Length: 308
Ligand SMILES: [Zn+2]
Ligand SMILES: [Zn+2]
Image (tube, rainbow, N blue to C red; front, side, top):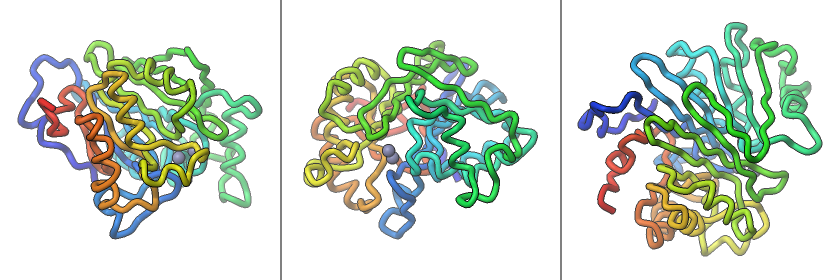
C-alpha cells in the first residue's frame, strides 16, 4: 500500500493545474532483501513512479523495473491504466527482475513502452527477448500477452522526448555495461526529478551529472555505500550518500533522496551512517522509503524539511 503523506490534505494547492507525485515502489539495490532489519525502508529493488494527476486523469511513468514493479503494475492496472512507460537505467537484473511479475505485459489489452539508452551491441528488444526466454521463464518474449504492443525506444544522450506533458532527457552514468540518469520535468508546474542510480563517482561524468541535475526539485542518487566501506567496493560501479550530497549541493537541488540501499545495510545502518554522512554536507537529504509517496509541488513540506 502506498502511504499518502499528510501535506496534501493540509495544503490543497489552489493554483496548481496538476499535482505531481513521486512514489517509491522499490529502493533497494542488487537483490530483494526482505527481513526484519530492512522493514522500515523496504527490501524491493529499484522502481520509482513519476505520476501527474490532473483531475481524474493520471499520467504515470515508471523508472526501472526492479522487484518493486510488481506492486506498481498491480496498482496501476486496478485503477484502469492500460498504457505503460518504463524507463530503464540499465538492464542489470535488479533493475528488470520485476518484469516477471508485471501483470500488464501479460495482457492483450495493455501496451508497454520501454525506454533505454542504446547499447552498442544489442538492441533493447533483443535484450528483453533474452530475458523472457526458456528455460529461464515459461513465457517467451514473442508470446507476451501485450505483444505486438510491447514497444522499445532507444535513446541517446541529448535526446529530449515527451510523454504527455512530461519532458524527459537522459545522461549516461559511470557503471559496468553503462547506466543512464533521467530527468523528468513538468514545465507548467515547475517541478523536476532527476533519477541517477547505478553510478560510481570519480570520473568526468560527475561534472556532467551536476549540470544535468541543475536546480532539480528532487535528486535521487545511488548511495549504496558510505565512506567507511566504500574503499572495499571501489570499482563496483556504485557511490556513497556523501558523494550524493556533494552533487546535490553543487547542482542546487531542493532535496536529495538516498537510494539503491545496500542489501547488507539494515534500517539502523541507513539511519546511523548513510543519512548523517549526507546531512553533514546537505541538510535536505532523506532516505528513500518503499511505499512512500512524495508530492513534488510541496516537496519540502512533505519531507518535513522546510526552512532547512
Ligand atoms: Zn542496481
Ligand atoms: Zn547495475
